[in-house]
Image 1 (spheres, one colour):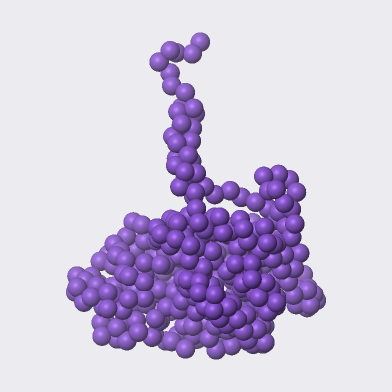
Image 2: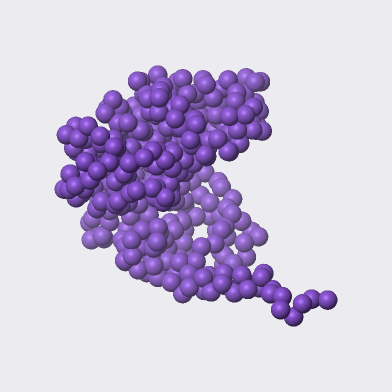
Amino acid sequence: MRNKASFDYTSSSDVGLNARLKTLKNAHNFRTITDYQHNGISITPYASHTHHSSHKPLINFASNDYLALSLDTALTQEFLSTLCAQDMVFSSASSRSLSGGFPIYDTLESHLSQLYAPKKALLFNSGYHCNLSCIQGLGTLTHTLFLLDRFSHASVFDGARNTHFKRFRHNDMTALEALIEFHHSHYERVIVVTEGLFSMEGDFGKINDIIQLKKAYPNVFLYVDEAHSVGVCGNNGLGIAYEYIKEIDFLVLTFGKALASMGACMLCNATQRDFFINTARGLIYSTALPPINVAWSNFIWSKIPTLNHKREKLHLLSQHLRSLLKEKGYAARGEAHIISLMCGDNHSAITLSHRLRECGFFAPAIKEPTIPKGTARIRFSLNAALELEHISQLAEAL
């Protein structure tokens, strides 16, 4: 028989959960998950998701497959024709620190180490794993301070959560210099974290300016996340940071966006690589990526320098959309293939997103707390499979 004093922990817990979910709903910030049928540049809500009133195809302006490589069937066929039996394995079944290592991992790391010499590459399961694990690892070093651009990715802040860190105003070199000047003598190392191309603002990090600051302080290091620029920007698509490779201490490349794959790598010196192998928990305690996936990444990396035609088209599409938005007087942000239309509050962004859906465009609202309060927006993520007419139709729908 149940003791009268016993407590129903499950129902008690749900009360707290429901209260939190209600708060999110009231703030127009409640997330749901929808599956889609993908057909080229269009997606269609999967039929079982009955909460959608319409299941018509929507032109997808939310994909991070910037070069549209996942839609290139000729590229896929070429990869399959080159795939060897030892790489056609769909699970590593272990972490690399145990028995999950395969030759293809070393092949890809060697390739990247040659491309980005003198840096050495270390693979991770995703950009999130890489940032979280490497910043956590660096944070275990005594007397280390992180200075984070306020608009850095969530994985950076999650990694820094239990470290000493301070934020600086986005791309504000005066604010960064003041922080460095005030703190550098109190720490053994000060690590500045920025991005090649910021995922929400769509603007470029001021890497050269930070390097100039770095030169004045021998204990300042630079950490750059190239998630949204690698494959698209820089010499042969090798990223914004490529030309500064000797001046950057830690460079993160992710494969799940322009490279149409999965995974990421840290590029650093040999000693730092050994340090991450021994401290990066996301590497040590995660099952490694499937060999077939790493083989695909290696294949794509061999093609990246040859894809200037896709990069040029993406640049043209971006110029066209930015020009049309400017002509119409919209408040828009973005210097490349990520362009945000500013809406202000969450409700306004959601309303506009729904109206665009009715017009046949999928462009989700980006809301607080992903971005600062009062800056809710529609984020248009362009890809090279789109045509100029799609951009014009979108602008007309707006």
